Image 1 (cartoon, one colour):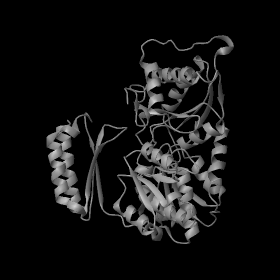
Image 2: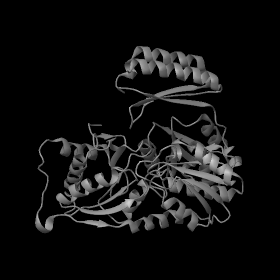
Image 3: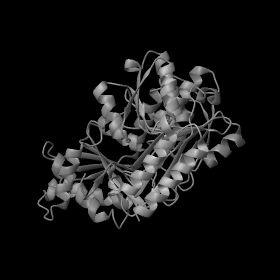
Image 4: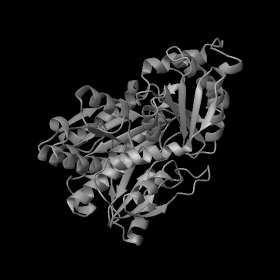
Amino acid sequence: MGKLFGTDGVRGVANTELTAELAYLLGRAATALFGKEHERPVFIIGRDTRLSGQMLESALAAGICSAGGQVILLGVIPTPGVAYLVRHLKAQAGVVISASHNPYPDNGIKFFAGNGYKLSDAIEEQLEQLVLSGEDTMPRPTGSGIGTVEFRHDLVNDYMKYAAQTVNSNFAGVKIVMDCANGAAFEVGPAVFRRLGAEVIVIHDQPSGTNINDHCGSTHLEGLQAAVREHQADIGLAYDGDADRCLAVDEQGEVVDGDQIMVICALQLLRENRLPDKTLVTTVMSNIGLHQAIKKAGGKVLVTKVGDRYVLEAMLEKRLALGGEQSGHIIFGEYATTGDGLLTSLHLVGSLRASGQKLSAMGQCMTRFPQVLVNVRVNTKQGWEENPVIADVIQEGEKKLGETGRILVRPSGTEPLIRVMAEGPELSELQRIVDEIAATIRTEQA
């Protein structure tokens, strides 16, 4: 990729790396690009609850209008809500202002095409070239040619109605604790589940602009675990900042991760004969136990590189219906074009309801082999693969594990981190191996 777009749009510290000026230029560039096929392209814009969101939203909308585009502002809405509404409204593009699970000073801008899918690398590169060209020759109409802005937060109801219709269940009698991460799910999550009859106890649903993901949500499950035990709930659900991910907690307060959720949902689809080619798509990060559980049920697992875009590519190529990541970023291809935390939670609770079991029992459908993951903050992610010192310590770890485990080292696509993961039967040995690799990377990439 180029200088602006990473693996999930443009992201950086708001007002230093991701400035209002850059948002304005991105708006102009997107309008010029989409305006080649549509005289007055329509953009829908959603955001999460970050303090910087309104600033970037205003700048982006101004850029679109200055180039003659039309803007529909949705306000705070989950990322997958924008992906759905861009198709539903037949708009030319959707834009989400969010940095997902990152801390609140960060923000991001990512685009969806009119079909609800993220833009291809080629289109992002065209946008980048327009923004970085140094000379703004993009359209600048006057008079009636200038674009307009329409505020339509009510459209979030269309997304909620659609999401609720994807499950054939009434959730009456199900007690849920829901952690909204003080983010984009704070409104829609509780509303949809209550509409379906569930009893919902909500935590972290008071966004201040600075408390998104702050020791809450899918990256900090401790509060949800305690709340589930306290309220004797059937299940706990946790979203991330933009609600495209979901993790769960069972009635005993134990974590149910994305691998387990995928297995539970895949087994339900297998029972209903609704899992095409009996295949689940997941990444190299998924636990060995997932593979064993799906194979035992007569299914197959297709493995991709880390990243939801690779999962989605495989799903589209093979016409498969379910795929995702251990992080809880799960795609239900029959209903959505991107990972959707709300859909994930709805179908998990639907599977729970259909089984008649407790979630702790359902979670035992797969054995979770010990995994240790350490995120190493580095000054540069460049060059680590060619570093012989790092290569040697990884190779030594692989020798210790032999055929009973594996090591995976990879850079984060959105943060200055190198992730080190080891998986195998003995937790203490995994910890020693990962700590040694992490210490070496920390020294070598300083």
